Image (cartoon, rainbow, N blue to C red; front, side):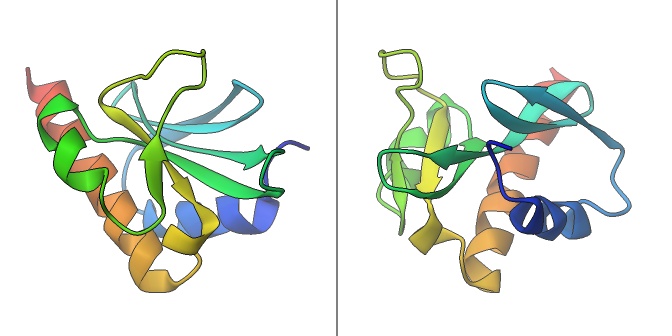
Length: 114
């Protein structure tokens, strides 16, 4: 398995009451909210730790890039602006995970209203 079931359960608990579905892709688990990619989870083999992927949109990207644990998402070898990887240090604590889930859901709401 390319992601932690424990971490997936933490995300599921925060999405309770929201219509979402899970999709295994990109070597991990993606949480689709309102049919759009919102949050992802995988295992970073370089750092040997869990990693979160959050879709934050291009407008919030620069500000959120400087938050604890946040790094560019370069999954394909190119920077994917609007998406961030979050190292485990940025979501190990409940407040950190809550913060990133909130940011992903905020952008998802904007994205799906357009």
